[in-house]
Image (cartoon, rainbow, N blue to C red; front, side, top):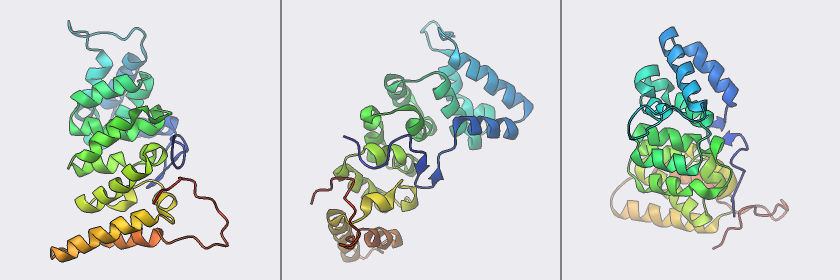
Length: 233
């Protein structure tokens, strides 16, 4: 069962997911001639069937290009380049899982950000769950995007929100936060417990906690809107 807005709905906590054609146009405009030529060759490798192997171990050329994207195009463009490579290669969940398992933090982040573009159902949730167990705030922020909003079960989603508060990831990274938090009394209770623990330890309560707590307020009875998430107490 999925929760929230569909993975390909086109929205995230930070705004609208750009169409892949738009990503390509922006990259072509931003990259210099050398990097642009590399990108075009990399995308051709990714789209090739069968994929060209470049090692005796059968490592595909596009997978090597996926790893070197930051060095070839600049770290600021690496996420977008990797998204395009994954899409061109028609990477399935098994491929994404293998790349994630052997990837650097930057490569894992790119895979997490690409999930809404690539995976329709919840099959890739183990990658999200793994990232949420990490203490790397880049991975945590990438894990709470629109794919998690669509597919992460409610109890795990609540803990993902708390993980953001605990690690200092701005809750603005949490896709569809207002929709999923609305009227969630259990999340409100968990937030209250977290705030009490911080206060008892002499530590400040994050401002974002109050922001999320305000979102959990029950809806007015006159709203007449059904809870789309099947929240349990």
